[in-house]
Amino acid sequence: MGFVRSPEEIARIQQALSKPRFVNAEMLSVDFLTHASIVEHLLPPGLEPTATPRVTAMVGRWQSNCVGDFDGGAVYIEARHGDLVGDYVLAMYMDRDQPIIYGRELFGEPKKQATSRLHKSGTHMNARIDRYGASLIELEVELGDDEGPSTGDGINFNYKAIPATHGIGLEWDAALTCARFESIVRVHRAGRGLVRLGHGVHDPLDEIPVVEVTGARYVEGDLLASAETLAYIPGAEFLPYALGRTDDWSALDTETRPGLAAAAGPVRAAG
Image (cartoon, rainbow, N blue to C red):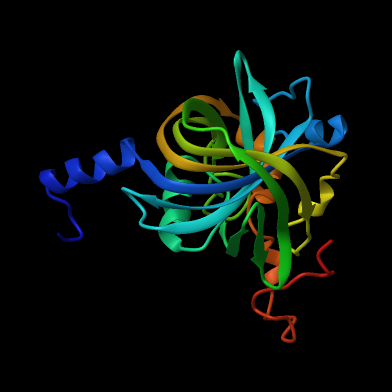
């Protein structure tokens, strides 16, 4: 194996790229309603709100056939593209570079590095995502009985976009992608939960008000993924959203602000 891949290596790598499997997953999720105006503001061109302004906060851990073992979490907004209804990935956090690079480059996921925790004690579970001293996602759930095995499917919407080489605008139009997940569920426990979204310089999750919690669940199982590009969005239209899905590079200026921590921690305590 070297810097120039052989045909055999290319075939093996492309198998992992085209047929990713995220197995032995443990995922804790809380669904809640926010204001419809917030959803309309946050959804990029190419996606439309549904009748329900649902947001989901999730923390979990997985094994895989392509990026090793990893922990992380995400915030999703229910959205529509044509006849497809799924979840727009507003923010996503992982603990290692392989799942970050893989998800960004393949699906267009807005992944950032963070630490996560998922803890179970009897029927009670809690989870959190922390980044640069800010608690970004906190979940508290009281679980009911296991509802048994099942199968299902879901859709995640993402955007693949990169900055122009000279730093102004995007290099090309943004690709709206659709990742489809076939789920093989072995454990499913619904419950009652709470969710708190915090704030960091680069991660203003508290801009999403929690109006009403509508459900919570803990799931164990496997996710089998595939993805495709649905549409292309003009770069100028997507630029505000593209820059919002990455860190604020101007907040990492240690040249003119030598007292600034390299990590550019939170400007206020997490809520």
